[in-house]
Image 1: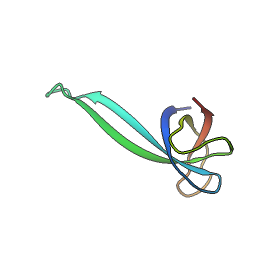
Image 2: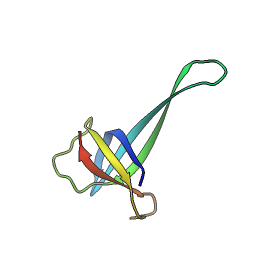
Image 3: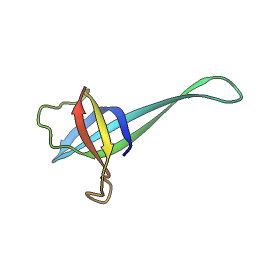
Image 4: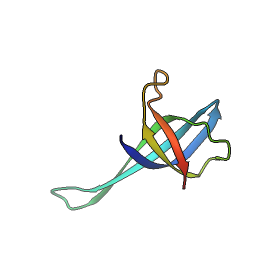
Length: 75
């Protein structure tokens, strides 16, 4: 299963956290480092989290219409 590292940006929903994942890569022609951000809605049952925490998320079965990831642990 895929695992990504990201930062929690929203915890206002029940059992759901919005996690922002940054992806950096080098452009093949211009040789410039680019950053792309993507937000994931994740299933979160951990109670000691707050906005700004770094977490590891893992792909899982569909839990709702938009939730296909779950928080594994806090870094």
